[in-house]
Length: 181
Image 1: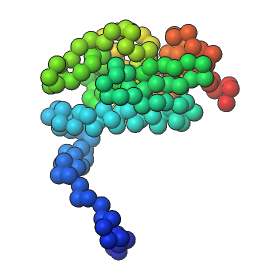
Image 2 (image 1 turned 120 degrees about the vertical axis):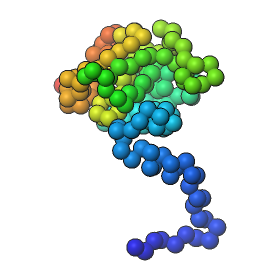
Image 3 (image 1 turned 60 degrees about the horizontal axis):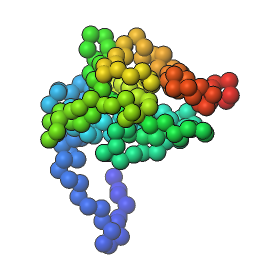
Image 4 (image 1 turned 45 degrees about the horizontal axis):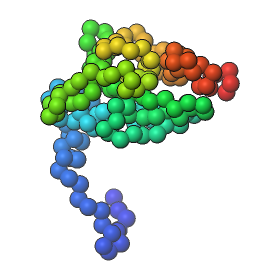
């Protein structure tokens, strides 16, 4: 196979060895071990955030990415409100459900994990990455569960749980509804 030649001095840098490691380790996602999940947790979390971004774009919504050190990941920019969104991603099912423990920080980080304060964010996006589905909620709890039986509905109507969660925040008139499209 012929490749396009690079201009002198404009050759791309060699990929870091970690790039090849990730490519090999994550090849069979989601059928990967816990040690691989832990090693590439940041990368998999970013994949969840990108699924959120893609979903919002497909729903015609605007989002703003936020600094890693904020207690929220995105701002959902609605016509008359800014909504702070925390995105949590799960990869493995347990007893027919995906369980989300809502904590900030990293278990293996220097300060570990801590509970969120109710004022830290407005909306939670529960990303079920292996299923390419998101459930939105404004319900404040330390643990959320998404049953496997919910996945087909979440995929079929990705905006339905968003509209419900925004309604729970008192923002029901803001988010576009299917009738308005």
